[in-house]
Length: 338
Image (cartoon, rainbow, N blue to C red; front, side, top):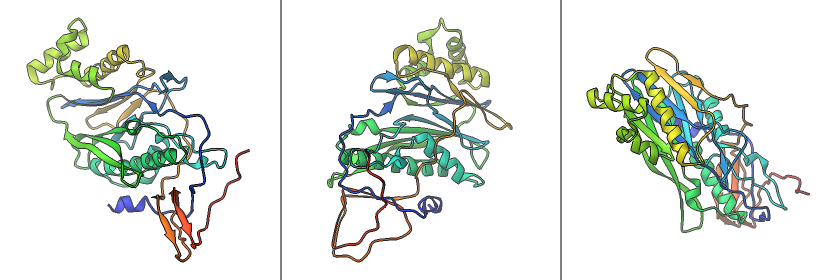
């Protein structure tokens, strides 16, 4: 928890008052993806696609969905991936237009040099991603640009060698819920950590139905030589004889078969390969460094303060649908959009 608290400290202030109303065109949440994490006694492979879709349309540029956290662990994301534009005819707050890619990169900078367990990395990322989901959902709602709660679902995998040198796969599913006060909070739908031992193990996120069916029943594709070998190995020894290269080929097949059924999946693969005694290697497109996001702040929604002294402090705060009566508050100003 000390690491969480260190993520909150900062030295600026940001205010988003209720007077902002939206008249911009509705912007859909970006979605689609498959994440595959698969391993056995010989190593692990984590694979994602790179297709980015918005409103049912494929975007030209691929999206970064696999991140090297350090030489021992990676993170793969699925679901909500880009913040909606926070602007209207009355105000513009581009500081909040950050992608989840930017948030993960900021975590990597914050965590550099720290010896964190896979559990601690997963908890910290869940905190940061959950805060972003809460913020964007509440702001979009205040801007009269609502999005179904399911549109903000976010999943991620953290995989690699833990502080005890054991290979593990952590899987987290974040969801939004609406409170009686009409504000959005994040809840953990599920979270788990599995140790990779001798036999094959896998975890899937995103659009997972095709891969889940084939990994559980590879005989559905016995004409596919990769899945035929996988079927033989799982029956013979639980898959512990499969090489890292074979694990990679299986993960690629899961992405390709999913792509055949879902147009939201595709594009160049992003692949992380773990072998015993070696730093993780990551293959795939090279992405430019994202802009530095705002991650150190407090979020206040639907708060009413009356006849109170000056409200201030060093912590940055984002206010959504908040009211002050007889109270002083320093505001962060921007030039109005023209």
